[in-house]
Length: 612
Image 1 (cartoon, one colour):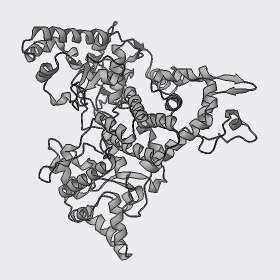
Image 2 (cartoon, one colour):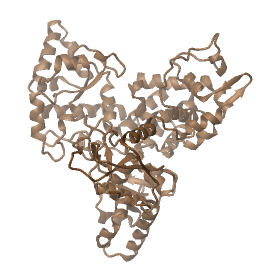
Image 3 (cartoon, one colour):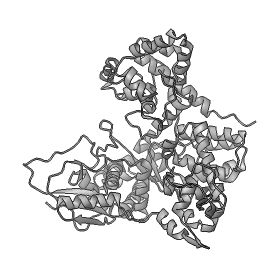
């Protein structure tokens, strides 16, 4: 049965997803967009930017499928009793799911997560007039500037009635726009019958409806057999010919200079080369004495490299500045950009424990450092200390929840104009995450980091994993430092200290299964160590800590190296007191103490020495 109406708009698309009238073929990946991408989609729609088309296929119910936003376990298996055609969403799943998540309370699952639903509440700040979408559209758990010289507030801490009382119609919850007809009476009651406030809020609701929900969606209906549709989907995802800014810049910078040709792709290969390069771009390509570019692999993707080059040369974070790059400017700065780029990579690896394989997770960090190195050049000890403190505060206290070009520019300006310690004090006022509850927790009322192995793409989880690396975490058994790019047996693995498939682990999962906040406590970061695959598979397996820790400890004692074992545990933030608890399989006691130990390291790395 054909359900897609001729004049499809965003509101109808959301309703189709909410009512489960359109389906995701199981060969598509799960929903993976982060909150920054969702925000940018909403902002793009509001400002009438193109978001491309949606591709549907009305076909036979012969594919395993799941609803929009469904987990990878919510698979509908086709059976012989189904007769009616199914509407499949072949292209546009991420956008459609993001819209469903933003405008409804429909359960949405991200990635491979099958237990924890994703939930967001996004507000439009109607008083903000700048160019940063991350301040135009505010999540309720983000710190907002309320203009009274305080440290700001979080909308999630305020009831809707109090939001109206405190801010009037300034913050408009976009979910209200989607179901305004049903809830408008409730809203005027929450406003205490304030008619003028209701009219103002209603007008802003209407603006969101007009700019976003009533906007036309350009949909394409694919016809043909299943085989033809699969070919179309493969072509969309692997042979995509849509122009990117990098494609545009390849054409824009391509230039004949004498007998040589400048090509941006070759230029990036030179920048990615790990050895020494020459100042003259074309000398690097000379067959007789040039460098060997064969087999050079990109360290970052092409678009990220273009952004880094622009920021380094111009200290400008606006994406449109990339279009201002000139061929001659690129060639004249070949060695400078190459050397500074590799200085940043070496510094991040040696000082901040970021491996090359993990760089993609630290885009805003690299962007800021590109401007920093571009301005200051060589980095002395004082500036390195600034970078260290800035990095850990930024990462752990979540200063860059998205790209935030305005904040990046402001941070660079701050350190250009002030002493490093003064600049840090000013910059850290923008931190959006606090660990006050953990610092004040007790064993009777414990608090834990909201970081879980079951949500590996979570920003706080990534940050806390790096924190565990910050003492050069060494493997329990062989004392090696596990790495992402190591050989298979010594590659890094995030392993449960209380294994989830051990007897103790199963008891913990059972005891916490119905806990209001900590039902997934077995996956908490305080129960995670960084180990090699060899130790994980051959030494620990599904043993209780009381078994495998004693076994490993006894081996060290036989070699008169008990002190070495203690230092290895210390590198993983496990103290002798915690080891005693592990010998007894005391999960709660261990988790509380290790959380506190990790908190000590956060304070050590983040505390700023106040300027005198």
